[in-house]
Image (tube, rainbow, N blue to C red; front, side, top):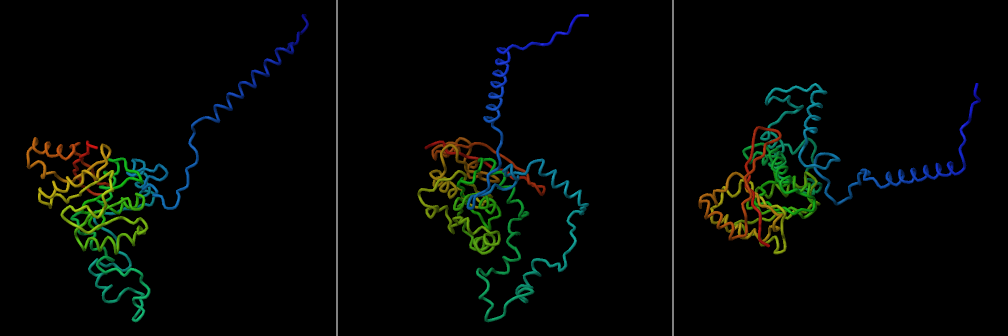
Length: 321
């Protein structure tokens, strides 16, 4: 029977083996330390806009996963509701009844004279407190969020973008821009006094947005002088406003707006139709737009998240410096 032979490792082989292992560990450590792995999310600093919706993803529109999540929550809680049927609360009141109660009883607990005006920093009319202005638009108030999501996605909106709305009304759309944008980055020209009262005396304070300092100016006839000569915008939009203006005034407004729109990246969006242009005929419309330095980009439509509705928008850009 042959004798067993052991494995003999010479000193040079041992040294080379240790050296090779050291080199392997060095490259392994280097590759791990230099990988582009996601780090922890930075905390939002005070005064900076936090992205609306989407959680840590930071998106503006809800994703399919977001929709499925809320549907799952409804199912998990066993919630069922027939169309247009809601169980009333402990004291069901219509808006008209709420307003009557406010005028007559002033609320369940309230101060009497002479202290009645000493405890309310910004007294608000009862019509606004019961949100009658939410019914001004002929469609649900929630449609304002749909418009915001479409426009924000269309221009790749960022918190430091600058936005001008022509005719912001009671801020059905504007509230979402003001919430998302940095302070003083949302501007608006509005002619209607009652709409402005609703914006300043109810919507902004009740939603905690006074610190955003939006520049909302009362004016008409497309006069943008109060916004300053140096203001330029990433997005200018008019939602169902040009429909109610004479064509001549719309063209005057576009001429004044061109210089306020950022070249190439900036966009103008007009909703519903552009009859101020189409009534001229295709060639003449294009000629007039070109003379202003504007180019028609295209027609878009977006759906509502919460009700059966779609809206049409027309997009323009500035091609001249």
